[in-house]
Amino acid sequence: MIINHPILGPRDAQEFVYLGDANLINRPDGMTAGIEAFHDYLYNRDNPAGEHRELWYHEQGDRSWLVVTRNTVTHEILKVELARDVAKAQGRSK
Amino acid sequence: MANQWQALTALGNEMAEVVEIGPYRIAERFDVALASIAMRRGQDKAFAAAAKKVKVPLPDPARHETGSPFSAFWVAPDMWFVEADFATHEDIVAALKPAFGDAASITEQTDAWVRFDVTGERMAPLVERLTNLDLAVQPEGFASRTIIEHLGVYLVKHGANSLTLYGPRSSAQGLLHALEVTAKSVA
Image 1 (tube, each protein chain N blue to C red):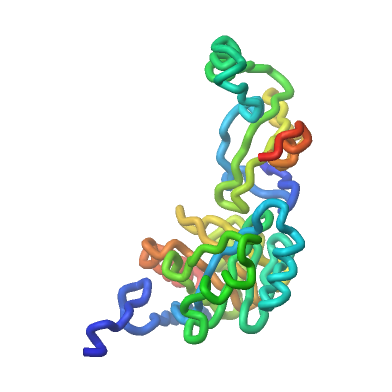
Image 2: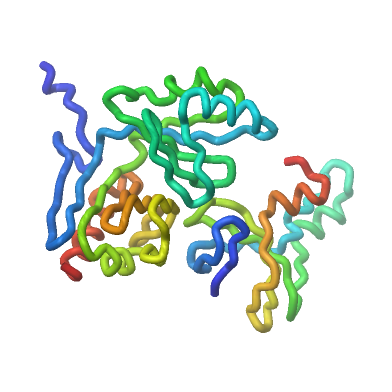
């Protein structure tokens, strides 16, 4: 599998480490959001057959976190973004 | 008494090791000081100005740029490794910190890595057995982190017959062994 890195171009998937669902970026505030929201964030994952947004870490490369949109049925990679750009677009500054 | 404080190289010797196998020459280097420099968020202008002032090149992604006294290669977004002559810049952080101040986070890296300069004709068959990077199609000045055996290393391509590897210092012997075995199999 080849992941088309937004900065470095096509790189072999063996250079990357998979973390999981990209919704991990959206951590609720544990003090105000309530136990249900935090429980949902911590334990519940969608497991779609089809398009899935995932977090990948370019460990043996530039050490950047990526949001990869991938079809879990065909393994086709539809979109690759830097996770920090995704977070910034959502109004997150960190 | 002086010898009592002789610094050892990454391979544990007093002198840098040089191995010649067929067309290949693998030379350990311990005369290069190394530091990582990462731009702090929102400090773009101050960072660029400081780099210009002390003549630290800031090459584009996946690039190495040679300069004097500092050379540098890109390692991550807004982060570079800076190289300098060990004899004149042993304390490389002290040389950089006054110029960059709060615009950058600078970390000494000199003794965290072992450096090997590999030279020789027919570099392609050697490199394609060691790493998944297609080095033959990369231009001079290409720099990237990659995997050799199980080790994360930085690779810089200086020319068709010349490259530099930075590997983890604690695995210096293992990296050299990997280079030797591969060189013997293709020499």
